[in-house]
Image (cartoon, rainbow, N blue to C red):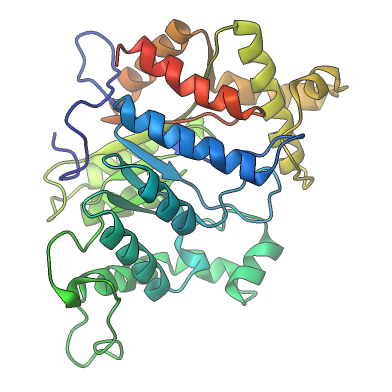
Length: 360
């Protein structure tokens, strides 16, 4: 199978079980903000991780759009990516993703055309159709109460965005004289970042296949749907100008530490943060000490057990074994690792240990 053209560096970090096609490894960063730390601390750690990922041969580094979440500092992917582009030289940078219904397609085309001009041949545009927040915040972002309509309108919005990216509206279209700048209207190579579709269900999987686009599935929070969605994607796939064959990436939560007890403590901290988010009490990521002392109800313990069951954590070799097993089970060409923990230094160290485990 081919991968998105010009998508990987020459020596990527690769996982995969012996005898299987190796999966490339990449980074998904939410810029988590823990109690006792600031957004500035989280974003400085993001720069460290991006540089480390480039140095150690990870394929790409993506940031995810979230809003009104104190514990997540990645509300503006394009801004973060522009800063990271100035601090890296080779690694691919992208959105994992930009939530298309939150924005006018022209705005996204302009933002990512600008990023492509700043870092030619290094930019990915990953798109999702969820709001990346709660309903009230989504309404504030979109200036409309018709939120369901925004998600259902995703294919039309996507078509419009691609026309802006390609400068390809047909004559007579109301937008035919509008150009996304920087972009193809100015000529030159590499002015069009590749589009990826992201999803946690079958909708985007099927749409990505029909359009011949690479597909990234959010296994880290929807594991029960991973295999059905990937099957839908592969069955629906039609070759395109971007891809000759399906290219699937799977997101996975993974934390490697020098001390396995530290790994468990950080994962429990992240689970408590997610529990609070799910009940509408979003805040900073609690300290491991707070999570350890928290009096979980039985229902909460069941949630935490389910959440942590889907996180690959422990020592470096243990994490490698878990990643390899996931790559083999899903047949994904690429795994995108997210390490959502309280402590910035441990976020950085986790990727370093994973790279060590793969000998890169």
